[in-house]
Length: 76
Image (cartoon, rainbow, N blue to C red; front, top):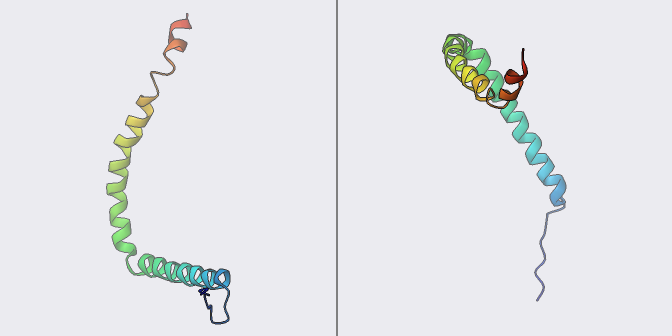
């Protein structure tokens, strides 16, 4: 006995495309709502983001100093 899948008239590729489009639309509307309704909260978090990003940038910048150590020895 051979089992056949029935797609009810919609091929699986077209169905998955529709699901992805619906998901992307829902995510776009959700992001729009979050930004429009909570802008004051987002701007309040920007100052904390700046404080947190400074040590991260400092750490990443100093992490690459060991690679260029031979350039310092050649300087007169």
